[in-house]
Length: 341
Ligand code: PBG
Image (cartoon, rainbow, N blue to C red; front, side, top):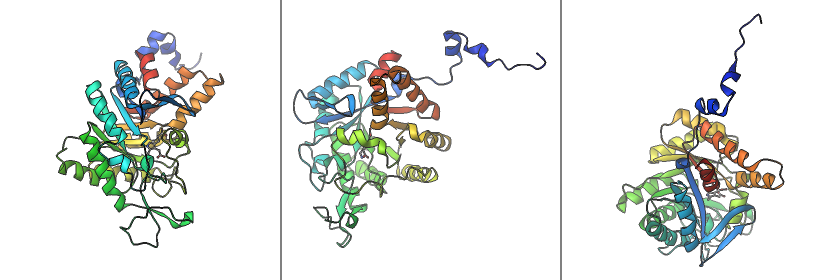
């Protein structure tokens, strides 16, 4: 041959060589396992659009968390399905809320497991929005109970919502939640939560901010799991436009300035460029959430034998790691940990 050939295939010849030169590795200690806690006892109700994922009563959540922890998964992210919903999200911040109950049980039954609490109001609101709803005609501060008749005539008000998020965060921390993770996308919530935690004496409770959270069709199955579909309108006035990378950097920057200890990009696979840009620019621990729709797509195709489930699961997770996330929230946490075991 007249020219030197770059023989990259030399290092691909055996599994041992490929393993030696592998640039990115997955380990279970990067995983956070999301769980949906519901009232009752002995409840294990599979989510229709998320095969393998269940709504779990507190006793079952303890078993599930023990299993995940034994597989090497260090943390869970808790979501709650309250007994009742209302217009001020009482279920989110009440002392005996469902996640507070789970927090107390998990703290005593699974010591060593890191408990993260998702802080948002949508699961606890009758209208399914992440903040307080009011009609624009009313004065700010007077949050309305019922949604207005015409869907164009409502507003998810920012500042009045902050107090409820702060209250929720303090209540969750009291119940044993170790890390507070706001996912509502109101402006200023990280600062408001930080102040409230500090005032309550929880100066050592870290905040993992869902900093760049996009308005996404990939949350569909989650809303079935958490029964949190907005009853009118959508979330585009608070979650980010999927077209915007630079705005995502501003969102993250603002949360860091307000006191976030860790940041998150969500969803993961359709936003790998955002993860990579955030990794370049910021030095905080970076998490990414492989959301319900990402999971559901893989499961649906695998059930049709159109793709190899395990391969695609691991490939999707390594892509998130390669993009730069050090922490991955995934419904595959247990399954992937078992494979890596
Ligand atoms: C609460 C919240 C959502 C998710 C995490 N926290 C739903 C939403 O914003 O509609 C989505 C997680 C998933 O899809 O797996 N606001």
